[in-house]
Length: 334
Image 1 (cartoon, rainbow, N blue to C red):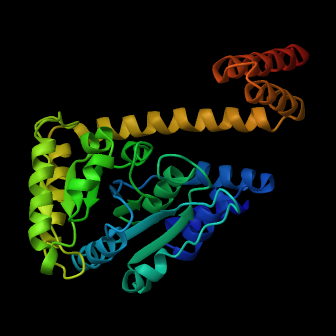
Image 2 (cartoon, rainbow, N blue to C red; image 1 turned 180 degrees about the horizontal axis):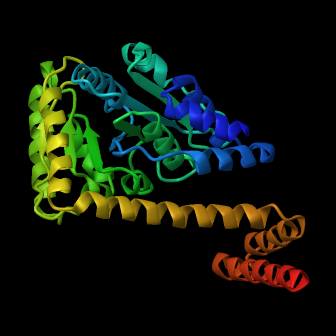
């Protein structure tokens, strides 16, 4: 029995340690681990009912971890099993990540009904890890019926998480009026629920103004979900105010998708997007893993840097070399 098959069997028995090992395996960049990771995903059995996948994004300092801690405890109290996948930005200099989310969710991290897993973004755009989609499937196979994905932050590239979750939550702080200027319209349009955090104490009035500004902004936008009006709620994750109502809105949205047959449509879209992304990544790995193609990449890069070639034309030349090499390889095998 391969390592991957053994892990798949252990995960089906709700073995949390095996789940952690499995995510580490699929995240590994070591070529020797690829076969075991592929075997793991091939032997993984889909649960009878997939989890409710919740994506949470927001600017740094909005309180995403505090919100997840508060929501998570309430979900567990309602009988759910919760998996939290948090993405930490990787340093472009060292390649490392702090992965400190467990220290910011101490109660949730210690609860046996919760699974908190920080992962490095590894330079991947979109606020997610390269293997977040696989990690979600692993958590579902392990019996978690609620999966929360916390992204790196918010911005133009933070849309990819919306393509792998069922509900997209945008969390803002009371200074949302200023933040809205820096948040791309695409993120606002993708939000299914908007929460204004830190709505307490001296910030309560500012939070209410922020909610009003958000309502005015969303009123001018077309929602991505038919017959759904995006709710904007004031909450205090620190004090627990509004958390029950926020969860109720998330569940209402989930039921809205089910009632209109949209959940299956959204899952098919998620699978299609995951396939496209995986193909792009596999092609890039194949191209950069070939020494000859790497030399060609260095050559066209120098032409771009010297101003003798535009990036688009350089990319076209590189792709031509790549496809020509594939053609020669096919000729040798026939």
